[in-house]
Length: 75
Image 1 (cartoon, rainbow, N blue to C red):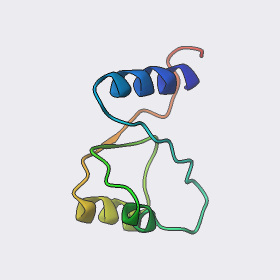
Image 2: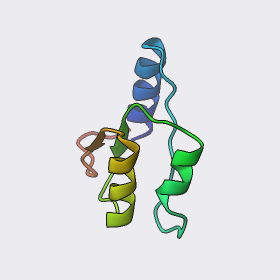
Image 3: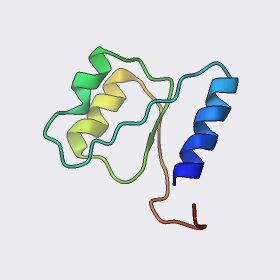
Protein backbone atom coordinates (compact mmCIF):
# COMPACT_ATOMS: atom_id res chain seq x y z
CA UNK A 1 0.00 0.00 0.00
CA UNK A 2 2.87 2.40 0.77
CA UNK A 3 4.34 1.94 -2.71
CA UNK A 4 0.94 2.71 -4.20
CA UNK A 5 0.64 5.89 -2.10
CA UNK A 6 4.11 7.03 -3.13
CA UNK A 7 3.41 6.38 -6.81
CA UNK A 8 0.03 8.11 -6.62
CA UNK A 9 1.50 11.14 -4.85
CA UNK A 10 4.31 11.38 -7.41
CA UNK A 11 1.95 11.08 -10.38
CA UNK A 12 -0.48 13.64 -9.02
CA UNK A 13 2.37 16.00 -8.15
CA UNK A 14 3.68 15.80 -11.71
CA UNK A 15 0.19 16.77 -12.90
CA UNK A 16 0.11 19.82 -10.60
CA UNK A 17 -1.95 18.35 -7.76
CA UNK A 18 -1.17 17.79 -4.10
CA UNK A 19 -1.92 14.38 -2.63
CA UNK A 20 -3.17 14.32 0.98
CA UNK A 21 -3.74 11.11 2.93
CA UNK A 22 -6.15 11.09 5.85
CA UNK A 23 -6.36 8.07 8.09
CA UNK A 24 -9.84 8.73 9.36
CA UNK A 25 -11.10 5.30 10.41
CA UNK A 26 -12.58 5.09 13.86
CA UNK A 27 -12.70 8.82 14.62
CA UNK A 28 -15.84 10.69 15.54
CA UNK A 29 -14.92 13.79 13.52
CA UNK A 30 -17.02 13.95 10.34
CA UNK A 31 -15.30 14.56 7.00
CA UNK A 32 -17.55 17.61 6.53
CA UNK A 33 -15.22 19.45 8.92
CA UNK A 34 -12.26 18.72 6.62
CA UNK A 35 -14.04 20.25 3.61
CA UNK A 36 -13.98 23.60 5.46
CA UNK A 37 -10.20 23.61 4.98
CA UNK A 38 -9.54 21.80 1.68
CA UNK A 39 -11.33 21.60 -1.66
CA UNK A 40 -10.38 18.22 -3.14
CA UNK A 41 -10.37 17.64 -6.87
CA UNK A 42 -10.99 13.94 -6.24
CA UNK A 43 -11.24 11.62 -3.22
CA UNK A 44 -10.16 7.97 -3.16
CA UNK A 45 -11.76 5.98 -0.34
CA UNK A 46 -9.85 2.87 0.70
CA UNK A 47 -12.93 1.11 2.04
CA UNK A 48 -16.49 2.15 2.71
CA UNK A 49 -17.47 5.56 4.02
CA UNK A 50 -20.15 6.14 6.64
CA UNK A 51 -23.33 7.56 5.06
CA UNK A 52 -22.80 11.02 6.58
CA UNK A 53 -19.28 11.23 5.13
CA UNK A 54 -20.46 10.04 1.71
CA UNK A 55 -23.18 12.71 1.79
CA UNK A 56 -20.65 15.41 2.72
CA UNK A 57 -18.58 14.42 -0.34
CA UNK A 58 -21.62 14.81 -2.56
CA UNK A 59 -22.35 18.23 -1.06
CA UNK A 60 -18.70 19.24 -1.59
CA UNK A 61 -19.08 18.08 -5.21
CA UNK A 62 -15.87 16.07 -4.90
CA UNK A 63 -15.73 13.03 -7.19
CA UNK A 64 -15.13 9.92 -5.11
CA UNK A 65 -13.70 6.58 -6.12
CA UNK A 66 -13.62 3.55 -3.86
CA UNK A 67 -10.35 1.64 -4.17
CA UNK A 68 -9.94 -2.05 -3.49
CA UNK A 69 -8.95 -2.67 0.10
CA UNK A 70 -7.21 -6.00 -0.54
CA UNK A 71 -3.61 -6.39 -1.62
CA UNK A 72 -2.75 -7.82 -4.96
CA UNK A 73 1.03 -7.63 -4.51
CA UNK A 74 3.42 -7.11 -1.60
CA UNK A 75 4.73 -3.58 -0.87
